Length: 372
Image 1 (cartoon, one colour):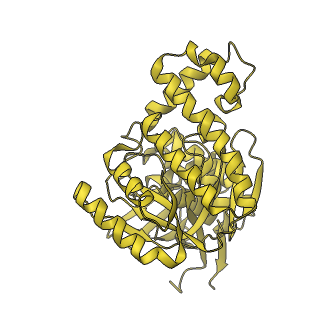
Image 2: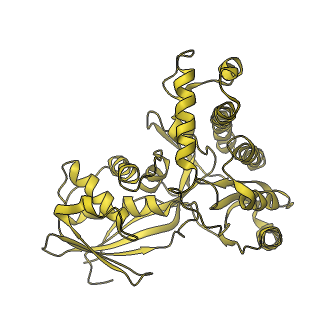
């Protein structure tokens, strides 16, 4: 690593609450975690971006003048997409060698893709000698995910990967990009992440289907309510207008409206450090994701409900796009080891799958370190 010039990192993320509302303009509460993607980078004086990985034997070389042509790569497409969007925005992209070291597990719902996209763009800016705004990097990374990788995502993952702050969650308005950092006062509790190890791919899952459903519902409701996005709809307005929607769309919108309301209540609970109440909100969020939004599936339900049944657990829910990925649980610190062994065993009995637990600190988003 020492023969590289810079080490640039971007974080994976958890989302404490506010799931599947970011692309509806809602508020979310992500936090960057210490699982991250690190890019070791140096200029190479050519017109190529050469990429290697610490965890893969693959090597990829991207031609800076043909960045649009790498969508079909198994590995390297996120990097190519990030570089292309940065280049199209008028930034200088120089030839360089990159070594990627990712500790965010792929397919875990902890947003390895956003960490890769954000760290790649930040590394390209750094090696070109350019100052960058983390919010701008996040927006270009989101564009790469949408236009290059084909996932019609909201801004939350990339924003958290870029703008996270140690020991804080971000209360982020996805409509205006206004943010407030809220200290995580966990007290006698800790956050526990458990990966279901149920393979999933956002592109192939029903994520884009849910986007289309909420877009359709917004198209109907905006004729009757003065709203700029679905998240603007109040609980009272939904009760009045919900019957205008077909049953499936009504369930989707009910989740969005009630989840947005839960985020506001959760922010208050976090400000006063009430982890027990926050845990109850997590449980309600999961129930809604399962029954109204239908993005959990058998495995994620088994994992969340196993966690919720343990006495040390204040609350647990699925995080991420769904149909696999991870849960986040608020667990009394003194009971963590018993909680983990209990949940893993119960989940294995229910599904036959072996889950994994992670302890991750809440960390900064982008970091840049000059190595030599």
